[in-house]
Amino acid sequence: VRIVGRVKWFDPGKGYGFIVPDDPGQTGHKDVLLHISSLRDGGWDQAGEGASIACDCARRPKGWQVTQVHDLGEPEPD
Image 1 (cartoon, rainbow, N blue to C red):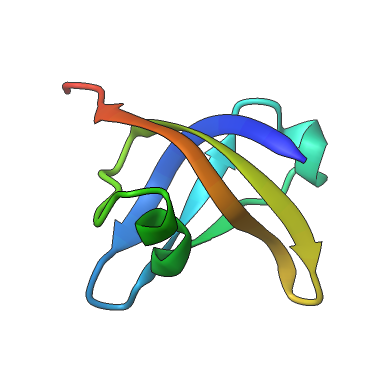
Image 2: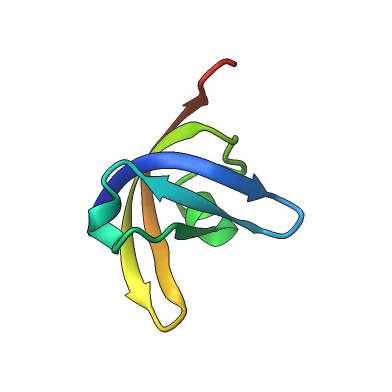
């Protein structure tokens, strides 16, 4: 499933974070796990809180997870 959303939080030390989809119905109103390996495969090392993101995700046994990042924008200023 391709989704567009915002980075809820991402901790590079832990190597993961979560995305909130713009259309929560796509994932059953669940946040999506963003693992650092998916970021690195797309050419990024970090995902700032509030950044826009376009990605593919899949349902895994523990919930939704990003499989490929297509675009990662800058966080919106406060």
